Image (cartoon, rainbow, N blue to C red; front, side, top):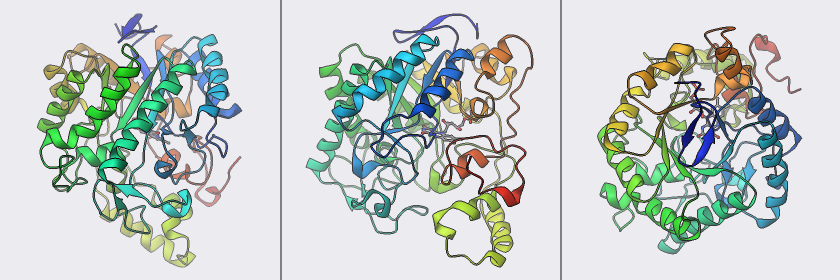
Length: 403
Ligand SMILES: Cc1cc2nc3c(=O)[nH]c(=O)nc-3n(C[C@H](O)[C@H](O)[C@H](O)COP(=O)(O)O)c2cc1C
């Protein structure tokens, strides 16, 4: 069943395994994809993935990532470059879905050159050097229009669908979560009000592209006080289905919580200190002490594999559109379990494709029954300093290497 051909809301797939969105830091200054995207996505396509979701692509300049090399989809002039990319990935055998995002307060105005915007005026524990500006009614509607315009561009560029990034604490996730959204107008308060921006985006996309696949990546839960919990994410999934969403990928966590989105046995604190902007001025001798403090302060996850199964299963029971499970699915058993137990209809992975773009073929051919990824998470930390790569086996003193 895992390796049988199937259909994801109109997207023909040769198996049920997607490459989950993974920022690559490979775009040029305009946000156009570079040759590195072509090489990487083509390798993943040749390596047997059922479908590929791009790294997050920005819909507006004020929602651009503070990480270098983010893909953008905010300008018609980018469409041509993406056409080349979609053509090449299709020739290598996989559909390509573009993830659309606005970072909200999870970015830095020093990098975007614009004020950071958010549903509510709350300082982000990681990113903001200034308080974000609370979005006005017209600002919210402009953002909804930007998502819809970007979806049209993606369709025109040959993408097989788009995925709206509503997870991990980015703007749409900030609106959905009672932690990030403290508004008292019609965009805050009840779940339905917090969902209103998504309804507006979906309404606009559906009026322009009635049948185009529009997926969502949502948080089944997070660990923020007053934040997302499974019963509410189930309700949000139902609202998504009613708004015309094609499929829901279930993730969890926010960037502010530390590495809960992509879990690992150990916090890579030394790497964090060596490349994160917050520690730029920290004297080197203090680093080991601080590394120890970071390790003690950040939560230690109990579950490293299949940590979103519970949320995915609850959501799948409540909706009739396909559900995709992600998060620590690094062995054949991890990938089979949600399908066999009815927790999800599809599965997705991120880190296993970083160390081995052909991981699907490896598993399918029976060459191995698990990814070689050790969940060290240096890929996630070092993306601030260098394009995406697996840092497995690198010595701590050589973290700055960027080739
Ligand atoms: C380097 C890196 C970049 C990521 N970038 C994105 C992204 O752009 N959008 C997104 O929704 N998730 C992103 N993620 C999260 C993954 O899609 C996935 O949800 C998470 O890593 C758990 O899956 P895994 O255990 O298969 O890695 C990223 C993860 C990593 C490691």
